Length: 125
Image (tube, rainbow, N blue to C red; front, side, top):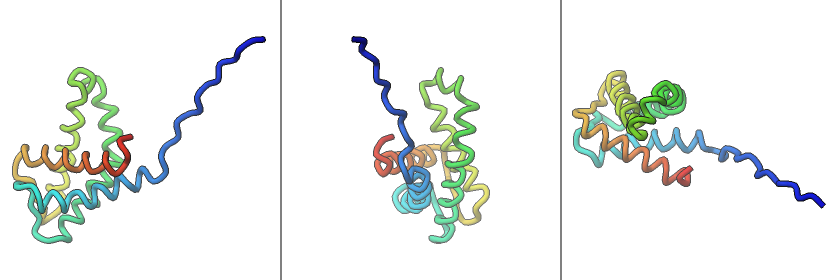
């Protein structure tokens, strides 16, 4: 009798992962405005617009940017991912009138908070 190796079934994407990421960005930006000094919005609508734009950027631009910076990311042990997140936050601040990021430290804090919320909500995938 021969023993056959059973291969593990392929990992499937968790249902709703895209929606969770988008929702975490939409709700994470207004949270950062309330909690972090250095992240400011003129009103709730501006912070929600920035959250929607950041969520779209996380879903559309971030994977491509991570792929482009993969060699550098390997050398820096993944720290370029935070640089990408900070750049996306600054891009949102540039495009949304009434939303501003004052300094890099505030942007890093916001990126950590949004990624933490997303990791907690998504079950640390």
